[in-house]
Image (tube, rainbow, N blue to C red):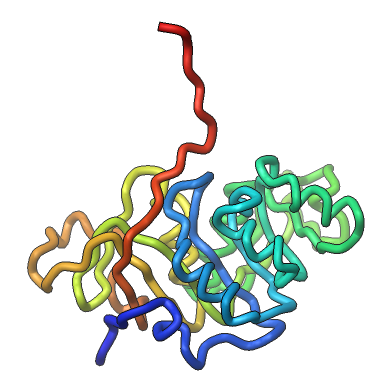
Length: 231
C-alpha cells in the first residue's frame, strides 16, 4: 500500500468534502499539521467542524482556515491566542464547543478505540455539564461525554518510516496520537521519513496501521510566547 505522497494536496485528494469533521493535532504552536491545513485552505473546503486543542494564531495553524471562513464549528479546550477566533465567536459567526483539555483528549482516544462514550467527573456542576446525561457511581456524579469519530485526521510527526510508524517530539505528543486514531482516514505530515527498521519500536508513539497517507516537508518553528530580558 502506497503511503508516501509528494505534496499535501496529493495526499488529501479525494478525502475532502464540505461539512466534514476533521480532527487536527497540535498543542499550542507545536505539532501543527501546517502543510495539510494550507492545502485544505487552498482546496476551499467549507462548513468544517474541527476538533483540536486550540486554533493556532491568526496567521498560522488553524487560524488560516478561520480567516477564510472555512470553519463552521470548533471543538477546543483553549482559544486564547487567536483574535479572529474570539471575534467570530462573540459575533455569532462561529460555533464553539468548549471541552476541558483532558476530556477532549479522551474523547479522541475513545473515538479511536471504538468507544462511543464515557463518564467523567470533570465539568460536573458547570456549564460543561448542561444538557448531558448524569449518572452516579460510588456516590459521586459523573457526566457522559461522547467519543469523537472524525471523517479525517490531520497530524504532524517529527519522524516516521514509510509504513507510517511515527514519533512525536515532546508536547506535540499530547494531541497528535489521539487525533490520528479517531479519524476514518489519517493523513500524516512528517519532518523526516526514514526506511522501515530505522526506528526503535519502543520509541514509536503511533503505529503505522493508523496512517493511510503521509508527506514529508519543511516546517516553520514558531514560538508561541517569546519572553526576553535585557542583557
